[in-house]
Length: 601
Image 1 (cartoon, rainbow, N blue to C red):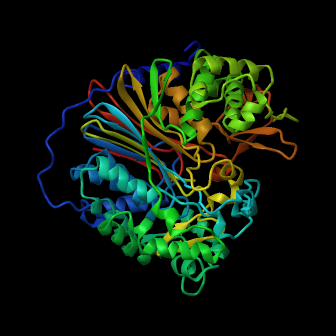
Image 2 (cartoon, helix red, strand yellow):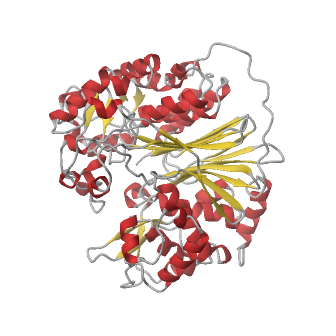
């Protein structure tokens, strides 16, 4: 904290008071509410609660949602109503896993399966207060065993235009085996407290009763209109009887989804992997040329593992191990920040040179391991090495010397997915990230009994070809729990195309500059840089957040993105919950844009 501005010094003091630089006390369970029949359906919530949260589904935040309480808290990157559903699970005797899974399942119904899907992916980091242990769960993509020529899978994706975002090919070969629902079942079976059927009650109610179409969802319907109209099954779900798209304010119902969720709630999550739904999925994918079989679905299993752990300054980060690749990238970036001296520099929003270093560090996250090995053959690129300070020091020296193959462009003139974090009164922490891993349903737009099947293979051909058919595809999700002095002090999750650089910045602000979770989220954020037609990279930042003086001092070409276009401008989303060790108060913060929310009691 060499030259920290007064504003940030005040934040550091507040951070110390709220437990981000102290130890999280494991508190004794308070008396549970009087025993009554559990019902998480919004119709059973206190009067006015559902209506209040359904109304803010169409809000557009300009600062992080923040909530505090002593008994439990839930935060989400999108869809505040889902956070409220998770909180209801806590209030009715559930724990952090019940709350997180309820919120995640509800999120999918609220988004109509566009950016997230019940056949998408999930990563989880879980702290079990009773044992003091951290567990990780990988429920990410499996590739298809019969897909032996991945390089020929059709499709591509470009963020340079709206048409490029739609994708270029319709093919069943672009579907992968998603583990989201398998993950819900496995996490609940291992750590949940409420009966499984209750986890689905809010989502079933929303699908059955319907919900008002938000402006954001109406834009998605319009963007994908032609693709959603391609197949009769999909058209029946997403278009009106006259073939037009649902508009903002219309009521959108999902009766087919409600029936499927009821089947899963009563029969278990294997309904989608070994039952009637699985057979329908295989037939739908095959009709578009896909090679997925019922054997691919029946063979899917989540991966439980110990966390990947690294020391960052005075803190320890617990995150997902490979085959997830985001955990390694998360730790590597923090170690590179230390090697670059960012902890001793001015805070990023106040310093062009510090921003320049952060941008250089972010580019490492774009390089696959084979490319790193070619560019830096003298370095060890195993996960163990990439999470060591010594290797970070050596790599940073080479980056400073200009060895990184990706280059930022010099200035020419003056200048998908969702997160849930939940903490319960017993001290359990669940942090999850989920995604459909494609743009809004995907170009193929297959829908099976209300569940969206994305096209994540349409732009990951090289990654799929690099692993054996039928194996786990590495995912870039960055989710974790932060410890200090052996005690958990923060649960966090990130998403979006710019998740890597957003996580780098948020954790740097919390661990080195003492910011609270909401201060870290509200700080001016860096977006994922973009490459021009010469292969040079251009830095991107939200318009109006950084001073022109700071941006000009970067020494790189930059682009300011309007707030209305953040999602396609390389935005990263990061949410978290901390707890004050003295007062026992939880501090939950949500995303500072869109319709996120943090709730607590």
